[in-house]
Every structure is written in C-alpha cells, then in structure tokens.
Image (cartoon, rainbow, N blue to C red):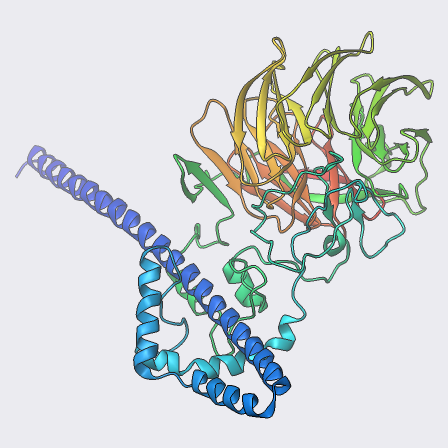
Length: 605
C-alpha cells in the first residue's frame, strides 16, 4: 500500500473520530442539561423539606403552648367542671391511627392545591403517615428541648417605623451599634422575607439607602444571618424560609443534603468554591461561566494593601479622592475634612503617627453628610446630606460660594455632568433636582420615584441619568429632554449604583445583599451573591474593567465587569459605607462606621 493510500485511510479514520466526537459532545450537552434540571429539582425538594420541617416544629411549639394555656384555664374552673374538662382534654390528646391517616391525607391534598406540605420528614427513616403522626410527641419533646436556644435568635431585618419621631440619624457615641439614618427596633412578629420585603414609606420622607442598623456589622464576632439554607443548617440557625421559625430537630444531619449536592457538582465551577455569580436571561438563572483570564488578565486587581488611615472622628458616609491623588475628602457629621496623601516616592507604608486633616469645611450645620462631589480641577466641592440645602464650597479659599435650596428634608446623592455645568441631586421624597452650576439656579425637577431616590450616576456618554430608589426601581432619564425613558423593577430597595465609564452596564447594590449588573442593550443581566449585608456603595474604575462594592457586612469586594468574577474579597472591622477609586485605578478609599477612612493600594496583575 502506497503512501497516498495510508494518508487516505488516516483521513477517513480522522473524519470518523470527528463524527464520533461531535456525537459525544451532543450527548454531553444533553446530559448536562438533564443534570442541571435534576439539580434544580433537588434544590426545590430540599427547600420544601426544610420549610416543612420548620413548620412542623412551629406547630409543635404552638400545640405545647396551647396545652399549657388550657391546663391553666382548667385549673381555674369549678371542681366538677374541671374534672369534665380534664377528661375531654385527655381524650383530645389521644389520636387514633385512622384519624392520623385522614389528617395526613388532607395535608397532602392541600399541598397539591398550594396548601401545606405533605412530605416525609428529612433526615428520618421512611414511615407510613400514621406512624409518622404517632411519632409527633417525640418531636414535641425535642422542640421543648430546643426552646431555650430559640430564645437567642439571630437579629431580624430592621423595620422602619413611621413618624417624625423615628428620624434618620447617626449616633456617634454608640460604639457597639452605629445606627445610620433611622432608629430601628426588633420586630416581635414575623416580618422577614430575606430582604425582599417592601419597607413602609416614612411620613417624613427620610428613609434612605443607609436606613439600616449596623450593630452587627460594626461589632466583630456577632453572628450574621445566613444567606442560604446550607449556611443556616451549618450555623444551627433558624431557616430563612420560615420567619421566626424554630431551630432544626436534633438528630437531623444538617449537612447530608449539602454533601449530596456538592458531590453532584451543584453550583460549582472548575472544582472551586460554590457559584456566587449568576447570569439571568428570560427569567432563567444559571451560574456564570467566566473566561479563563477573568481574574488574571493584565490590569486586573489581585490584592488590596492598606497604606493609610484617616481618623475622621465620625462615621464616614462619603469619600472622594482628587484627580491628582494628593488630596482626599471625607464627609462625616457637620463637616468635610481634607487630607493630604504622601506621594508614591515617600513609600506606601502606613505613617507611624496618627494623621490629622489639613483643614475642615463646616457643612450642613450639625447634620450628617451623605454625598460629596469634587470638580476635576479640585477647586469646587458640592456637599449634600441630612439637610434641605446643598453646600457649594470654594476649596482653595475655604469658603461657601452658595447654598442650593431644595424642598426636601435630605439630599442622598449628587452627580455632575461631564462638562460640570449641571448638578443632579437625589431627594428624600423621590425627586431628582437639576441645577445649573454656573448660575446656581434650579433648572428642573425629575419626578418618578414614589419613595426616596437614594443613588445617582451618569452613563458613559453622559446622556442618560440613572437613579435608584427606595421604591425598588432603577430609572433612566434623558438629560437632554429631562424625561424618564425606562424603568427596571427589583425585588428589594436600591441603596447604591455606578455606571461603567466605557459601556452601558450599570451596577446596582440592594438591601437584599445582592449586586446586579444590568444593561439597556443586553438581554442578560448578572447577579452577584457574596455580600452578607446590604450593599451600601458601588464605584466603577476609570477603565470600566472592574468595580468595587462595599456593605454592611464589613466587606470590600472587587468584581470583574460585567459578569462579576470576584477579584478581591477584603474585610474591614466595621460597616463600609462609602468608597472611591483614583483615576489611575491604583488607589481605593473607603469610609466606615469605625469613624475613619482607609486608603488602599490596589495591586494589579
């Protein structure tokens, strides 16, 4: 056989192998789809079983308490009536197998029509319905044993009370609990919906992005609410699906389902940690597949190195860094403090002695500052906060040029147009005010949000204004025609947002601990689930390649845009309320509830 014949044979075999490979790939894709469907079904069954487990324990507790009440009432009856009532009470506790079977059948019928769940108890050996019901006294005894632990429940989501008496404030004297904007109290009833409940609108119109109690985030060591059922089981905490529900039954292996899902590769990528970034398209959510260089690409952050601390002395709700990186402005209670930073030639090690500001700019009386915006030449500073006015400062002369009036009690966020001729301000009643920075006149008022407008930013082309609100909506406005062009609904209040400087992606931080990245021109959006507390600030880098999010959970996260590969996860010792990135993307400034700002060097690949 000649060489040509050998080559033809090799070619035929190669084509055959390619055909088989294509078939195998199709089979693999089909199996992958089936596996994802099975995993989703497993997760649904897991959540349903956990919900039913907590509901049974809840009912057991209710039965025990009602029994105690009846016994106390029987003791107050006359002797002849007490005897009859006691006998009736004892008969009521005797449940026959046929009655139990009928009750279980009814519960299963209710489950088919959206009622209670009629599933087998997770972690328990299979038993018929009558036997399962007969075992109920044992569950009640276990519930009673758990009663003491349920008294030390984790903090619930804060509930905003109506009325002017519950005004937004920051109490700087409370080292244990830094309450930002609103006094809160622990609700006695069930009110937790995993951060997806709509807060009642305050009559004063002063609910805001930071209307949360930071006591847990400000104090290291306090356990936080778990983000998912697996964390709830591992921590021995109550399930998030059942507000105020009891602890898990002793003897139930809390990790069995987690191990099973982990073995099946549930939400895992490349054998790494569970997925935290998800792609949502047409209502379908799936784990995001990252490019190979998502984290290690040149110019991507790989670490944060603390180089300086600026002891402001009050909770730092706003920070900004000058374009030349020589000056940092921090906003706290009643003043903006101005700090100089050492040049790169002086080294990046923290200073040995405590820092002092160069000077302070008194603003807004004794109210807290919420937002500061600096012009590119660092000559003018706009300051908004817990007051109806916006202070305009001449930085060089250290004097107030003008106070812009608004008809709201607080200004939550500020934003300037690229030419710095227009200033946008978000009001506590949902209005967005538009000012001419040359004449200091109010040009227009944008009305759309039904609750406070908490955050604002401009698109990369400078033509679209994005605002987020406490009414759970993200709105886009055409600044040329000064009208709303689109609206996006979210399941939670929006606390922060930032627009990419290079494209039309918008990062949104929410009260529900989630960061979402949306685009008006893309069908898909991305959702990041790594924060364990509400997301209080967001900032895109100058190139738009990454952005920073900070939150009540003390976390500083750096994300690859837009799909949310986590580049850096850093923890401070208190809630992180604000942040800013230098124009060269080498410096990050954060403001925290620990009454200081922190300067980081961003180390890049």
